[in-house]
Amino acid sequence: MVLQRWEPTYNLRRVDELFDRYWRGISTAPAERIANAPSIPIDIQETADAYELTATVAGFKKDDVRVALEDRLLTIKAEVSSEEQESSGDYLVQERRRGSSERSIRLPRTVDSAQIESSYRDGVLTVVLPKSKETAAREIEISVS
Image (tube, rainbow, N blue to C red; front, side, top):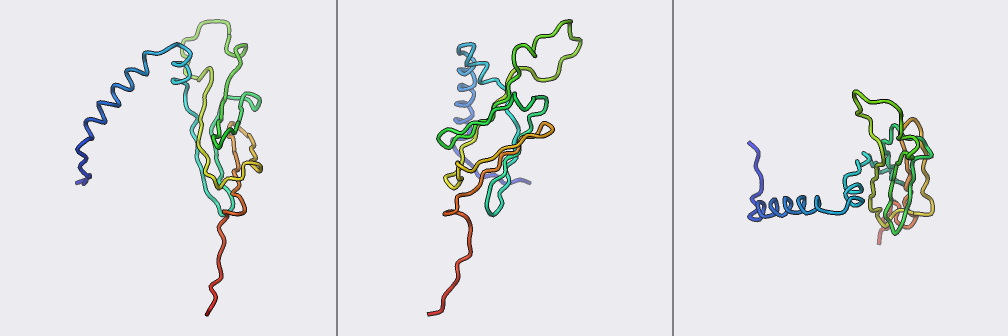
C-alpha cells in the first residue's frame, strides 16, 4: 500500500492544468512549432569542482548543434537545415526526427560561466560547467581554543 499526503487542492490543480493545455493549443503557428519541438534528453552529474551535463543529440551533425548561455540560462538547440530535410520519393515509414529540438536549463549561481567547455562526439554533447572557486567545496580546519 502506498501512502500519499492528502492535498485538498489536488483536483483543482489538475483542472487548471487541463485548461492550460487547452489554451496552449490555440495559438499562432510559429509558437505551436516551438512549443511542440521535441526536448533534448539530458543527464547532469555533480563532481567536487564541476557539473557535467550530457545531452543526447543523435542524428545531428556538430555544426547543427548550438550551445548558448544568456543570464544563467543554458540553451542547447539542434536544428537540421531545410536543404537536408527535403528528399525525393515517398516514405513508407518515417520515424526519424526532422526539424529542431531544444532544451534550456537554469544554471546555479555557483557556475563559473567564463570557464564553460563543451565537446561533441558520436551524437553525445558534453558540457562541463565548472564551479567558481569561491563556492567550491573545501574542508575547514577546526582550531582548539
